[in-house]
Length: 353
Image 1 (cartoon, one colour):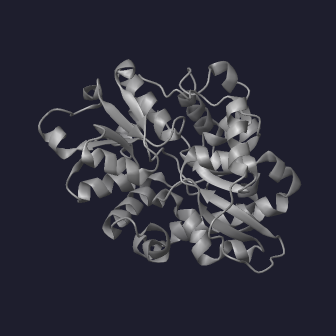
Image 2: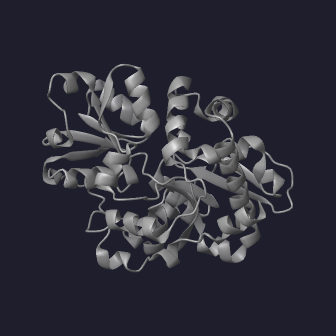
């Protein structure tokens, strides 16, 4: 497999990138009144219904109920979310759960504080219908000698592309191309710039609804998931720097409590009610039927109802990151569950609910 020239994040490369991004400013930041716990910026790594708990928390005012004013920011990708968190531009991030061990190994200790899901919902692979129906690409093995789209080098979509191609035995025959954001990935596949693309559930449903896309690997099905993963794996999680946990635990608690309230809303309400709550403000770039179908599947089989990331789930994630796909196994021994996961805030929020 042709790896990006950037390779895995080194400490020097990572800190250089965070220094560069620290010089930028947030654009279009709304003004807020004073809150008793102050303000915080929450960066979400893309736009997708797997962030529904965050969208609900914003829309229902749950952050404010806890005395915290939280600004929403689309941070556009996992690597950018990590960089902004390390640079102090955002206090909380929601992106791939792999970000916490990656940040910690880069010299910015971080912890996962809230789990959104139990499956990597971005581990799907889609191709053009014409290539599928002609027999040109029917399975992952058929991607040998072809280009596959991902977001950024070292992002979780890139990592899962590497992992799946290795599982299919074609790792050295596939060119994984970093394309930017999710919308760009769809466009590149549709126009033929790549032969396949990693995809979230909503991307997959949109391509199917428009009639031109077909999945050749659907990670949302239990059979496919268990064959490749063997059990729960945290996909999306909220995280913060350990420095924030130590210095502002009351802020972290208010933040997590709001997300727990949002998850309870999702659990207790219908897909139509959830969509009514968040679609117009956060997900209107997608067709509404695709969002409703995606949320139906997420609510039934993907969303983590208790928001607890377990040691076993974390260890499965670490195994995907290891074997030199993203880090060496020796490096990953330095970021065990106890180092990079703090579920105490979720546990307190659920006891108080």
